[in-house]
Length: 491
Image 1 (spheres, one colour):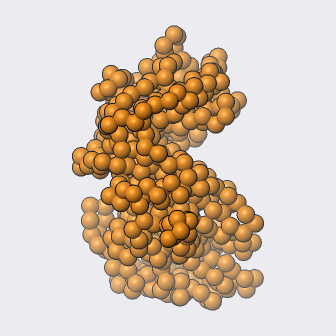
Image 2: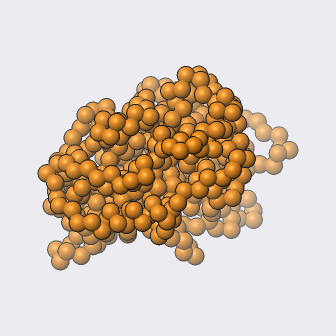
Image 3: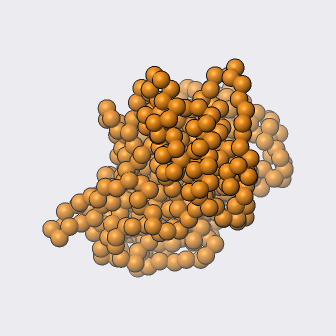
């Protein structure tokens, strides 16, 4: 179960490294150990994108590509994968991504260029090599999480739309996956510098949790990575859950969607919005794509931040979660509870020692469901929310609310269900007077704090306004709407 020699494909060969500390980041490994200096360090917290690399994960004889931030990605997590950095693209001749960037004059000071190049390379592999055409909107979505301080975004987007017009260059998936299979089949010996555990099944995760109770549990490391780069944290043992097959399930039934805790944020949101496309705008404001590619839904939930973006939506969807543990006979058992019941204080939860979050389950939409979700932050892109509100209702033919659930974030120490507002709406006609009552109920239930993101007064005002906004959204465009409550009205 313990990692031994770290092996991955890079620059047309298998790289083998011994004694890599469990807490070493992929960027440290590339820059300091392998002297791969095209991978830049900008923010060291997954915000600027200068460190972006593309991972190719084998699935049969094919590779699945995703752009990730190497600065907060642990090195051992790429064991058995292909790692591509900017210098890989022009080994023999310029890649279409590089040619397009050059022809569109899409580089200025150049510091951010390797990161943009790799995000475009990921887009190239996932879209152009699959026969699709890149649109400006698609380019902007895939370039999210990359910052250009010279404000050169227009030519970079032009380059994204241009690279598909050049002769297509395909990677040899079969050869690369063969290299990786051969490397994985080579026997290795446990080395002294590693304490990185990556079990293949949930039972192994729970056994490791019991054997090493002080070990740090990790998935995408979009939070834990900052503890490494900013707080200089180190652990003798790390338990990586991203290979446990039971935690990777993504299943639709007739009544529910079940999301394994180790499913990436990108794949989890894609599944949720398959049923509820109106949530796509909210999804694409959840960090940048490299963070969503690495981070997991289970990690976002377990972190328990009151401004975490997933929880208000999941609470509004009446999500339930399973906490897995081993019983006295060594068998896996699960404790199921509503998501909001997990939290008992600021970043504190009710998980017992030895328990691990295993899945999240939400009901599929009913024929009468209506739902909206809103996120307010200082920046439109790649920013943490100051306030979030998600509301889901069922209405009968008489415009009466037969069921309602509301999730709120940024209004207290934990992500919360807006029970007072639910009570004000339940069974009532969906009309302005009902919304005003719900606004007053929100103000009575929540007492936000002031911090670097927003003042308490702003949060209270905006929370009520979002409720009103949801109602406006549900009305015909020709309806004459009035009566927005002031702060004094809801205080």
